[in-house]
Image (cartoon, rainbow, N blue to C red):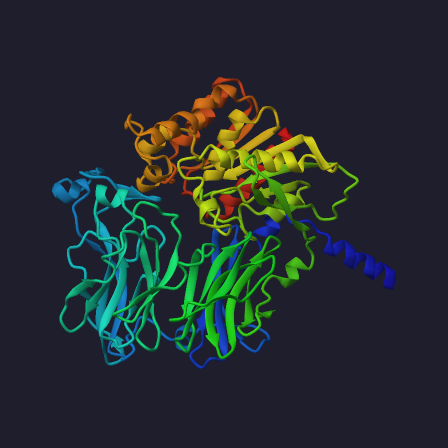
Length: 626
């Protein structure tokens, strides 16, 4: 009986991850530490496939450890950071109509018209058309414990705070003395907005009503201002206008002197940060060698210390209580959970256990680091994931995974779409290169991809798959290549230059043609920086090289391999025609191909039922073609 029970437990532990199991996992999102310092408040999103939505519940868990308890009074437990420290005002952001855009705005008698009228660029962004409304910061006095009538501190300004498309309430905060509202905003409009990344931090004086630009001297990004208890302000900064993936540093000012705390460290690219409770240092997250780790930097000393290390990602800093920091952490095999970190020695302990029961029944994938020589003799980190119960005596079909960005890190991420554990659990070895253009390996490595999108980075992919194909357990006659965004671009590019290496391709929201991309994308600073400029600038050698040598459409005559194409109809960053052109080119050349349009999705896949169709079509295609 004992033997049978033990055998059953082993079998149960070796269940393979499936799309259905993946979409039953809870999604942990931290909200903060309770006012009394005893609990971490967090929410868990759970997909409801039938209702095609994600339901959310809120919990508290003791910082000292223990069982989580469902709550409904989070507003009572958490401090409202939007109320001024002196308790007199509350700030918020509201959409305010500033400009006429619709036909009925200009012709009020024609209320049933369906017309949009534009006179400049930035007429659409991410997944929405410009409608003349802008997010404005509002200040309301607290009257009898409740906010009174709010005042717009950005009246008639055609600018947004929070920043679009994905800014949140981190974009506007109180100064520690309650005298000013400090917010980040790109005060440019129309075509000027579309070609610039110059975002500044502004201070609105409650007493005088005057607004001051605090970062006018910096031409690049200035975002996410926060204050310590001493009144000193920190924020994130990039230096170069038009370069959205510039090195991001942590800067602090006392109102007179400004110090870049991380500029001297070439490896550091700050992703998120929080002041230590004593105000004498800051914690931040940065990628390093294929992971995302927690760091500390002293102020004003600028001494940087790496606090955590290991093959995992620290994804969010929640808060501090004494010597303990609360973070979220995940890896290739595990979705985010809450962890405590001992800030003196970096020791981590799991605090929430939302998905422990599910993972106890799912076979994990072995992950390993591999060092591959590039064509120019550099060492490149490549992550390799193996199927559960991997047997080196067998041969396995293998997938090359191409990351997006182009300057996005490939760390120990856990995605509910591009889930490498799920791919490996379907019987594939996964090869995931940290090709050039990825932070965590130095600024030079990160920047080598700009104006060379289809050059050395594409060769890096071929170097990785060629090196892995030397292994006896890799079935080099059954290789596939998959990716989204820049990864989708990489798929299209590799389809024209792979020389029979791959049996199949899958691209999602990839760039197929540089000219039409330049003519229809919304954030023009991206192609201006990455391609070198517009295609019509005949005197611009960098741009002309990009459009000639790095646009996949120029190599489509070489396509000879089955390809599956996903594209979101509401993707205005990489517009729909990119996927349509690629599918049309494949079809007209007689290449086995499939086009899947996600009609209510943008650059991501956010709806549960769409996501399940995406997953099933993904693996169905691989089964048919690899």
